[in-house]
Image (cartoon, rainbow, N blue to C red):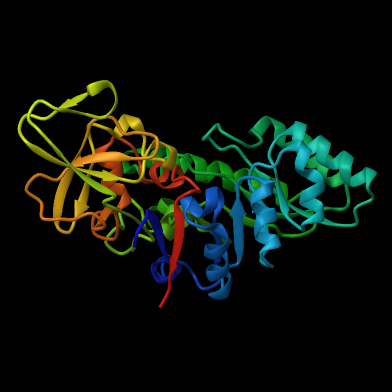
Length: 363
């Protein structure tokens, strides 16, 4: 390896899919969340692998992400969680399933369907049960359902909501209130239509902590990629971020390293230059907190992280130019890395720049 790469382990992905599936009833459908480039990996390769092993649905955040999957040959149903009015045409043309989440979007969607005389389109109805991020609040439900019933081509493939705090067992009371509200509203909606949409609410931590919230389908995102507050020992990290030592510089005591002279050598020091920086998603704000692994040795980052490189202190570490370094992998994983900089694995993974080469690992 002569450059920075992000290894994507599809064997770990399959393992995680099987672990999560083992927690479900045989009849429960599995929706895989592959938004944000498959949580910073490669959404197309992730989707192809999951489709091959039997996933029932995909979820993406935006229409463009769904289009990428369709162009790559993915046939499985795809839910667009946050479609915008400007994307309605593409949602229909690429056979995507829109989330209906606001009166504004719904009215525009209905207008387009009627104007273009669309024969049938599948959508999912989003209920806001307390996350207060996206979805119809309880007082809006009847108005929204009436608009849907008057537009015959629209069929609700699903009714869903999103849990706010399933990874915090101190919030059990609130989570149960969300689940009960979803049961109530979804039951009322089903009584007004002549068919049975798929009900889905659980995210990764909901699957493990609230089995009564399984309903007809679950949505797994971060768990597929190896992370969950309570099951890290069962799940395997999919991402490994690796780079190389591009150059070794010998600094004297008193020399400064990097921009703004934010680091001064207290003794004669060996510095390794690593070709990855804040343009790649390793934030400048991480400068005083992170280390990388060279073999089994920790090397501390020194000075300010630059756009394209960062520097580490390798004094006392036996290494050469061209040697591999590791930011995170299956041993020191992205959650460990995130904790060291006061972040979360979601943010670390999804911030990784597209200019980092993705390398697919599959036996």
